[in-house]
Image (cartoon, rainbow, N blue to C red; front, side, top):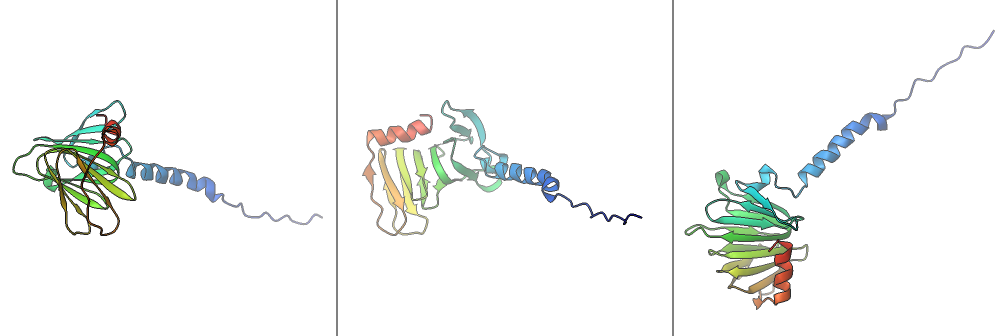
Length: 185
């Protein structure tokens, strides 16, 4: 007589069962961190065109146009679809603003650049925020507060960590051209 055989219960391969769930998590994470203009981040602005270098131009109506570099992490905010600020976590953006009697600002991890009716750009890295005024005037302060500066056309400021006084300087042609080229200008 042969001894009865005992079968081990079949082991479930959890990796195979988890694959669809992991794929969904990866897709949702990619969508949440995308730099593409999702409805939630455009705050009432509509993508109007993609520039040859991949930068995205947004039409926000009533005298406000925003251009963001293709790799920029950004969002537009404001009450009830009326954008009043652009938040840039990383990358470059250009704002053309002509709304008399209203305000608009760009907020970065290190700086706040508030418009006075103008065209200006920011370049945000982990170390600093660079602000350049192309026309009009822009007031720049540190996010942490302190004394600010007002930039006129061609002037810029680099806002790094710390509390040193902000220094206004005229940007060189090469630096201006590099930033504007990233923004399709």
